[in-house]
Structure formats: C-alpha cells, structure tokens
Image 1: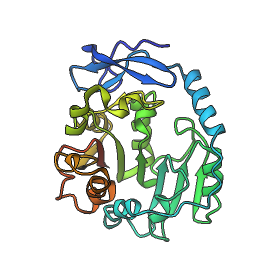
Image 2: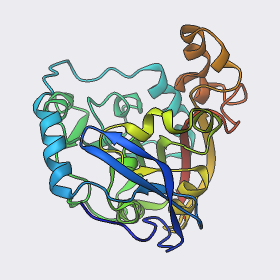
Image 3: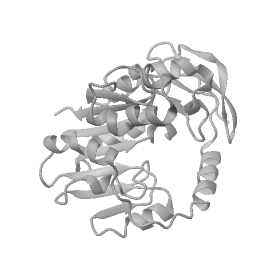
Length: 280
C-alpha cells in the first residue's frame, strides 16, 4: 500500500489523521483530512494492482444481461437542467455510463458517448444505435480535445486515484463554455455529520476520496471548471425523522433535482451534485 503525505486535491502538507478508519472489502484504511481544503482521503490506499484485481472480480460477477438502460425520472430531471444550456446537436460524454440510461434521456439529436468498465453493461448499452460506449479506463482513453459540450460523471470521482488528472482531462475534453456535472458523497453535509463514522460512504468498496462541498469546489475550480450550481439529495433534518419509505420519496435524487427549493439547496443531504462550466 502507498502512504500519501500530502493532499491529493490541493497538495497541502497540512494533513492529519481522522479518528476512525474506512472498513472496506479490501481491508481497513486510515483516513486523512486536509487542513487547507478539508478534503478527506485514504492515507494508505490500495495499490493500483489491488484496485484492478478488485474491480475485475466485481465485473466478473456482473452477469447482467438486461436490455439497454431505460432512463428513469432522475435521468430526465438531470437532463432538464442541461438542455437549455446546450446546442441542439450537442456532443455528450458520460463517464461511468452503466447501461446508458442517463445518456438516453438526452434529446435524439445529440451525439452520445460513454465510458463503462463493466463489459456486460458496456455490451448491452452498445446495442442502442444512439450510443457509443468505450470499455476503457477514462485515464487511458484517447479522445479529441474540446470535443464535448457536456460531460456527466455520477458517483465516479471518489473511486479515482488521481483526481487532479481526472478533472484536468475533463477540462481538456470540454469545449470552451462546456458543462460538467459531477455527483459524489459530501461528508460535510448534515446527514454525514450526524452519522459520523457510521456514514456508509466511508466504508464503500473502492472509495478513495471523501469530498466536502469546499474540497469539491476547490478541485473543480483549479482546472478552470467554475461551479455555478449545487444541490444535495439524501436524508435531511425533516425526512430523517419519517418512515424510510416516505422519507426516500421526499429526499430522493429526482425530487431534489426537480424541486430544489424543497430541500436540495440546503446543505443537508449526503450526495452532492455540482454543475460547473469551463472558462472560455
């Protein structure tokens, strides 16, 4: 295992150990926090080979043979926030495209590409004539610079070893004025702070990073990706007290994106969506 001595986001050496560990399938890992940007990360993360073996094992068990993904309410809600900002023949990339459900919520005139490491999911998604899905790690894929009007990446960045390289590449692939939407966990949210070391995202397999609102904005902005919108989904002070079924309906991602004034503009739910635009 490596031992990281400076912050992966801002490179500060002012880091300290958090008083609990991340318990994952690959083992138990110390968590560090940066005093400068507040980012949290595994101090002694698994090696790239260990991670590769872990994901290969997961994908080998992935026997899903469903039809190409059908967009859900969340997908349509998310795309609704983007369509008015994009040209009618926009070129879109989804990093972590799964079965293609998010991509297929975009208008039919758009050119749609995805990156998906699961062979079964990529194969199924490629059955749609609208989609081009690459089964190649984002870090290794060769795509033209300034190709995309929009890049979407949901629940991916926390798995990426080099987040600066990841965001730098996104900024290169975007056209000037292009938009990126990221979703990840937010440990600084009310929900995560209430759960403390029991917050499930600290212990999810392959999670190397735990962003706060501050550290995610910092990470984006240093690559000329200027944040302009931020919403949270997940339990909040009101829905936390309700029966789980009712609470999930009220604080789910679809509700948060469609009706942000209800709860999502408050820093409470533990999943953060950030919209950012590449500086011209």
